[in-house]
Amino acid sequence: MSADKPSRAAGTGRGSRQISRELVLRALYERLSAGTDFPGLVSFAEEAREYAEANTGFFRELLEGVLKQLSALDTALEPHLDRPVSELSPVEHAALLIGAYELSHSLNVPYKVCINEAVNLAKSYGGTDGHKFVNGVLDKLARVARAVELQAAGR
Image (cartoon, rainbow, N blue to C red; front, side):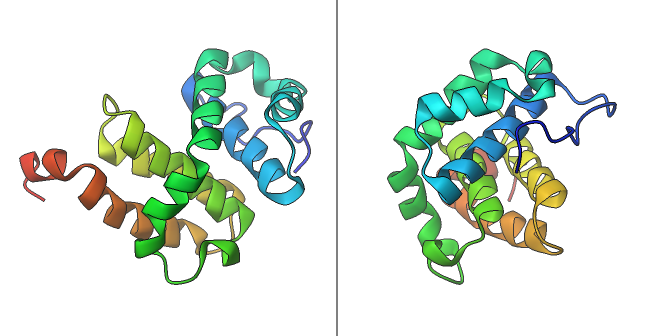
């Protein structure tokens, strides 16, 4: 994924947080594929045309949070996967990490929004049915990470 790749969000009326999540997905892809460190990932994102439209504070917070919690997030995801984390595609893995982080750490964001945003990223960048996989895994994780919220919603 190149930093100068046209944004899939361009012209769609997507908000700055959605653009930030897209940039985080692309940065995580770079991390998972090439092992790039945090400063390199930020520079990578800053080169993207849509970076100016992003909520840069949210972008940095989300990227840094996912990277700091990477091992814990993978551990939380593992019981809900049908294969080892190491066998996930980088795009699906990145979308799952974003969704898992938001489910666990962004309690002000409704669980349905956390899942939907990750699914939309997987639809835009992942394989044909990757979004279905991401949806299923995050739905199972939400039952653990957001049990109280789901119970209140009658789920």
